[in-house]
Image (cartoon, rainbow, N blue to C red):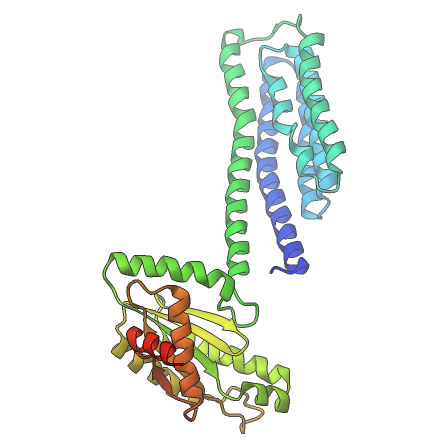
Length: 362
């Protein structure tokens, strides 16, 4: 289970990424307004050129506020600028040029202002849509009386595209960020917090899916149950911190020895589950024996060199028509035999029929 601390950190990361996206879009808007200063001056709309000087300062201020972490204030500066700019341009050039469409672009910006309550953010966003509609009411009779009137349809289309592209760009990046965060959260939920191995809950589905792939390609698959010997005694003698160090050391040793196609799970406490794919029983036994010897040579606590560890293992090849639970039980039974015959050894489970006969004889 994810802790509230991890959830908060990830939420803050998402918010940070979102406003980095807003910042990039803001640079684009800043550049557009710089170009508009010269364009409006060229056609003789001096008032609009002056308005765009104000717009440049407003967008520059908003970018600065984002760098200072004042995201909410930056959004309000941007929204005020767009509303005022749209009003001035529509009042001067009319609606045909299409500058009113920028109100659509910013209408949803209040919804990413997490300092605003959702109800208030919704009201502000709707207000911007109403402002867009109001422009058609107040300035419907304003006509374009400046040079290059023949380019008005092209300018209108350009404004629609320019107004829409930042929104599309922002939502694409937000989508990619959300997918990335979802994958990260899924990975966190699938991993044991201490050892970073897969946890038991997630591993079951992973094992069944792997089993299906092995069956379809007619490949062998072995299940190994391992347990650290005398772990409770170590915990009681040296403390839980030392116990955690040993668990991490064992997890690292298993991870480094096995291949990436194998599955390693912290099954619970000091117990580990290993899935060896594309491996027959005899080859699996040799690999686990080598792993067992590697673990026995570990010195997990350099400050306490007298602490030595060993592991016992139970191994079985997953046979057709046998369920996961039955196979796990057989591997666990083999582990039990290793424990009760001296520990620090690997035991191969009896064949399925022998196992069933043993159960019947009990």
